[in-house]
Length: 200
Picture (tube, one colour):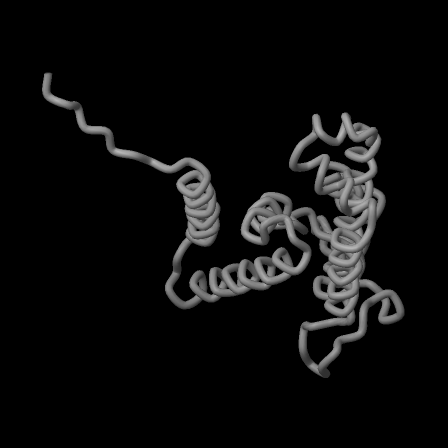
C-alpha cells in the first residue's frame, strides 16, 4: 500500500502546481472532515473511532462471533475441536482489520493532513502492535493505549523542536514500553525460582 501511494503521489495524482513536490492537491472543503472545535485538529473522526471501539467491545463481549474470535486467538486447537473454522475466521478478522485501518487512513488524510504525501504514515502499523499489547487485545484497552501513545508522538514532536532530540527517541520509548509489557507477562506466567544446591 505504501509503494502504491508513493507511485500515485509521484505520478498520476501529483499536484501540477506543487512545484514538482510529491504530493496531491489539497482536498476540497467538501472532502474533508469538519473539526469538532473551531480552530482545533480534533475532527469527527474521533467520534467514528469511539463508535468503532464501542461496536468492537460489544461484539467481543456479547456475541457468539466475539467468543469465536477470542477462542481461536487463545486456543486454536480447542476452537477446531468445537467445530469453528479457524482459517475462515482468521481471514475474516484480517479483512475487517484491514478495512478499519483504511478507514483510519481516510480519517487522517481527510481530517488532519488534507492531502496525500509519500511519508503519510510515520510507522502507525508498528505502533498498532504496541497498542494491541498494551491494551491487552481489548477494544477499550486499545483505545486507552492508543491515546497514551498519541501523547508520546506529540511529546516527541515537541522534544524535537524544543530539546532538539531525534525522532528515534520517541520510538525507543515506545519500544521500551513493549519490552516491559512482554517482560511482565513472562514473569507473571512463568514464576522464577532460585534453587540452591544442597550440600552433598
